[in-house]
Length: 208
Image (tube, rainbow, N blue to C red; front, side, top):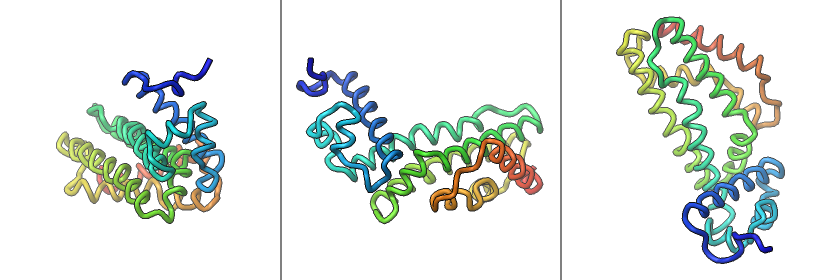
């Protein structure tokens, strides 16, 4: 029997689920083969879909990568900011939520999906702009709002949340992401825990 995706238009709910399956297959293809090895034909084979479906949904290869950037950003921004969402009950809980955020940020930026998408965006100004706006420009203001909330609750001493976020981000990430993008292995879980702890220690010396 032919795959339902090859026979006419799917209902909206099934189409959305199928689109997510195709994007997951495309991300796997990108991680496995790199930007140079990503083709619409390869994604179609992995997703058990037709190339016609891919072109109808995404237009071309760059637009497919752009859709991957957006989908990955939606999940990633939520994952790295949710740790700051609960109002902390005291000084120890502030440290806990900041360390959880720091570990999530490191895991995100050095993970296979992020590395593959960053490499795909290199040399393509449109994709690079999309990556920047869907990631940093969305996550930053959310973290800034949470830092401001913590300051308003008397848990942090923050006059400028945007500046405090830049300091926190720099202390956590340092040059780790660029080194992984250039081919170094990502930090281990133990190394991420140590980096998160040290970064939060330094941040709280400034803002705690």
